[in-house]
Image (cartoon, rainbow, N blue to C red; front, side, top):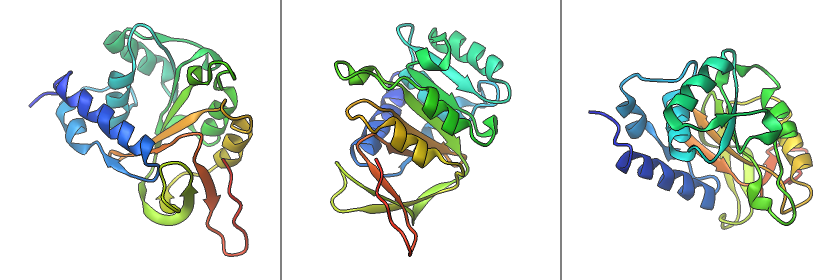
Length: 206
């Protein structure tokens, strides 16, 4: 069975919207990812490629971070006709799991935060990570969350602090989406506050 470009990508989009409107909700892209029949951009997971196919078109721009980013950009361009550009000009930034430590921090720093007049023109960062599951390592609160909710994510670096700096002048900032090797998706819009769950300290940051 092959991916239905209309029906299956609509399903991916709905799951992305659901996870964005309810931060902390983990959506499963496994069913759709299995339909790609092994066709993939260089170094890119099936779930990452699904999001590229869902979001990109000839009217938008993108940037890939990874060990073979040029090959991935070439294939994604051929599939979507979106144009690969420098990070600060890109509508979408894709960070592959092999991009290396500190790449997410760099991408957040370089990403376009939009403007006060047009905050919707900011970049969306989509990053692969080791594993995403329910847990209490990161606590989330904000719009779409009744009180607070917890997640566990296999991702190191100072990205939470970099995100805080990038989003300090709301409504400008960047939104983040994470997908793991099991095709689990988590969305963290700029309005979501994040706290590391430490017994001695809990500081909420945007």
